[in-house]
Image 1 (cartoon, rainbow, N blue to C red):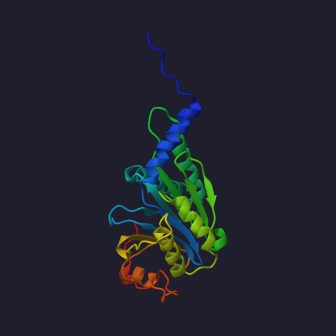
Image 2 (tube, rainbow, N blue to C red):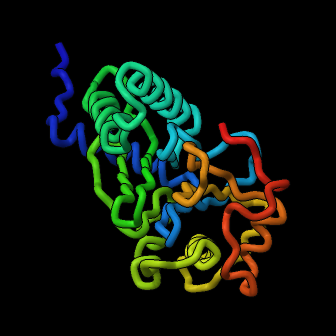
Image 3 (spheres, rainbow, N blue to C red):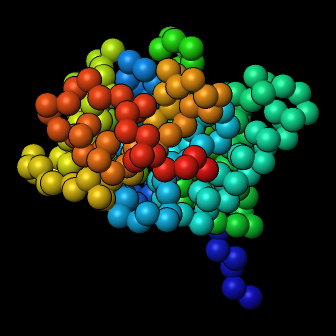
Length: 250
């Protein structure tokens, strides 16, 4: 009789973590960053149908890197959780912290279960407050841990390099145009120190804008408005300009 192959629990968890990290690293990176009037989401995404960013609830946005089908399932679950909690209690009871806790439990359970593979995803849940001090950004790695981020955060393939770049250059009170151009510059940087150009039509950009009069603060930035914000001559542009370029919220 052959001896059963034994793997220590520590080694098994390490192997699962390595598997998940490799899957996430194959995806394109994205950036979530605070600016003066809210929070901006920026990522390279050639698809116009498969979004990396989405609205979860009135003041809450969702960003994800990794396998699309896995993080799309999590996004849908988050929307259902938010709708049910808002309907059962009050809309103000739906918070990014509560949603992050739900995602953490889900990811942690899947990661520690030997019956299924870990999810190859890394999430960001953000909530815009009445003031910049009230903004919340939570990063959730594949293992279900929660990291409270401030200022800026990057996830995906080159997250460490991008985060280091942003930590040195991001500052409080940046305009949307300044924050957007900084995010694109960070995403464009190569490991060898050179930059590659990311065309506007390959960018996915969205904001949680605290100045919007609507209850729902999420809005996508597309078309001429995005092109104008990327120009150095337009530092004062805001996400309420050119309503004809708006894309309906999800």
